[in-house]
Length: 292
Image (cartoon, rainbow, N blue to C red; front, side, top):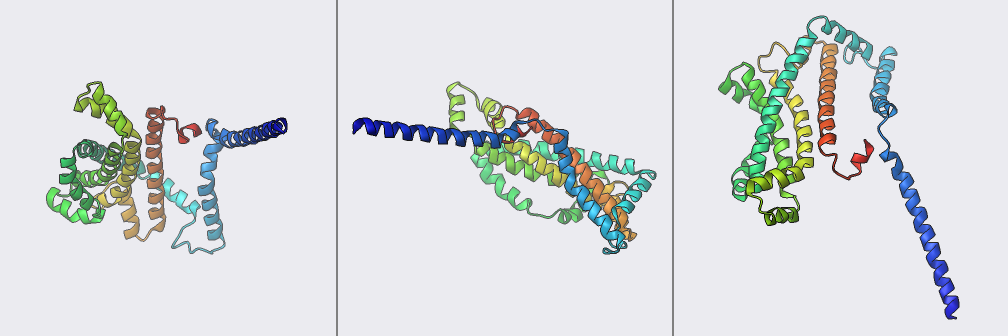
């Protein structure tokens, strides 16, 4: 009986091992495509949805399913972009990009400085965080009259408004990242005699980098959104100005062309940050990193 029981147990163990091995093999096969480097077909796949959408719009416009006076076909919008290119579109893109770059840089740097202070100091958190949480709920358009009264109609209020938009996502994500750092890492640093400044530089900030990059990408998106509101402040150049000009002249093709340009610029700038994120966070052994 005992030998029969041993044989039964051995058979059961072998069957369990075989099932476990099969399950592991299936899981490995499922995750295998994630470890392959991104190919050109992957990039083309990302273009599939917008190209299909534009083709559907073109087809709907050709059979007059959508009134062209309200929503011009993509071919007409393309012609409008080419016409704008011959009339100084590059200058509009350059000035808008410069405004976003300056405003985003100022807002992000201030957010990092304040975020580190609030993240590591409970008194600073109690003093500053409630006010910042209230201020970040204010819509972008609500800041415009105040900035006009305080700063006039030159470049300063435009850059300030963009900086405000970029500040809060970076601040919120960085504070959350610092406060969620594993306490054991801090204890290890204290055991090795690191000062408060060294703890921030060598442990807290590196551990909070994933949250920081999330905040930077969200802040950059908001910077482009706030750009449109900023260029309503007596602007004569910029993509936001083109958007406003198309609305005032009842030119939906110009409005849609400006929207497409803003979306393209936003995607390009986000891709730069995403590349930097992969470069500086390459040490992480996470699922997302295996897709690149």
